[in-house]
Length: 196
Image (cartoon, rainbow, N blue to C red; front, side, top):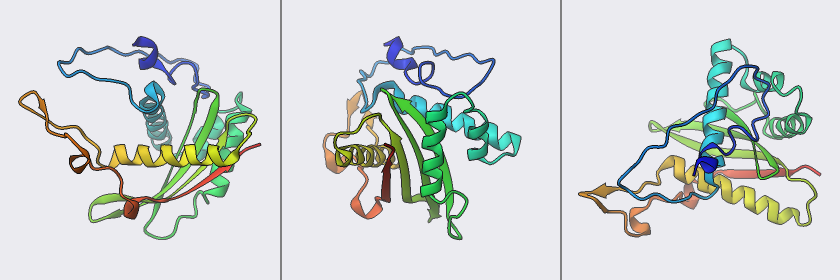
């Protein structure tokens, strides 16, 4: 379990940071838990990239420029980031929309994404996600694109509403009518660019 808890924190973080500590404390829970779609990488990418955004904000530096400055010894990561921000129109969001960026590697594939969002009725709405991926030699680019698209939809679904509810020790969420998956009407446009 420790390996899964640390996936993506130690072995695939491309940023040059001289002094850092990565640790976690396992917590026993009476609710049995299992693995998620992409094991430790899914939540740990969120932790790293969210923290990098906080550091960029504290330094008053554009989040993309902040990442660029820490990728000096990781040219493949930098190429993926550059492709995503170029294709996603970083810094050129229409009025009333905002952008976010993330970069991570899992199982030898490097992915960067630019999300374009707005706030609608107090809730975030994702309009567009542009992804760039370097997964090495590609036999079928269509399969790579659908994998990334599926990951985007699953990730947004989890972030925007999926939950398992427990009452008096029992699971209330017994079927899909109680499990709010992302609907097509709420799904963003997803552009995927495979780097050869």
